[in-house]
Image 1 (spheres, rainbow, N blue to C red):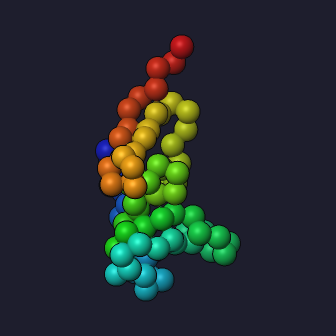
Image 2 (tube, rainbow, N blue to C red; image 1 turned 90 degrees about the vertical axis):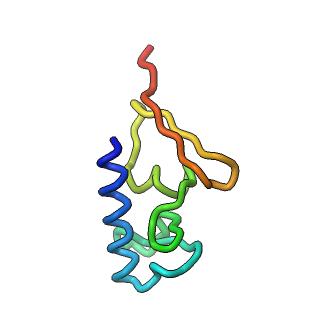
Length: 83
């Protein structure tokens, strides 16, 4: 999962360079070109926000539980228990 987070972050950063928004402190990026903001980014990388940031970049499914601190400063990820 760590590799997935790193790879996704690098892909988002590359897309932010193409769009010329990699230096913005906080903005959103349209990854798939449909005109909708897909991922919140900070300086080109996905933010830690669990609803608009890195979770959207990796498309976490129900096998993973995740959360963030208030304001999206940190992102926490753990395996969900399958009951």
